[in-house]
Length: 75
Image 1: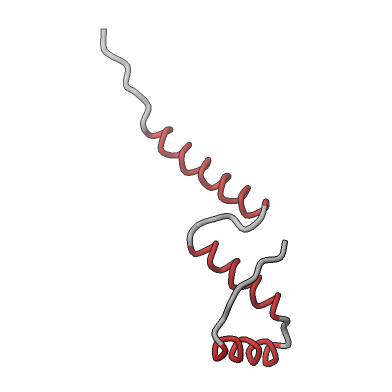
Image 2: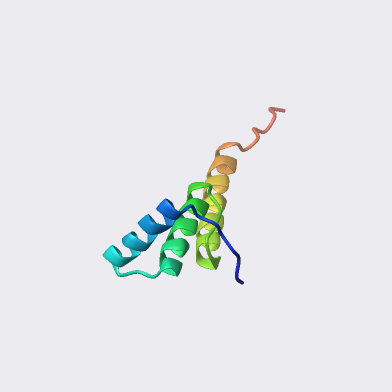
């Protein structure tokens, strides 16, 4: 999907130079930047990342419920 993004001239020049220095395309720079932004906010980047986060949540919730077992009442 294509979307238009506007940059001021100075920012665009710096991004072009960064791309040249790293031998990366503008698209590669954009992909890296948006992946970092999603990661910062805890949003899974791809299916593998989503599954990893889901498994971690399952493990942490099973640990807390294992310790919170109700006690049996004495008769």
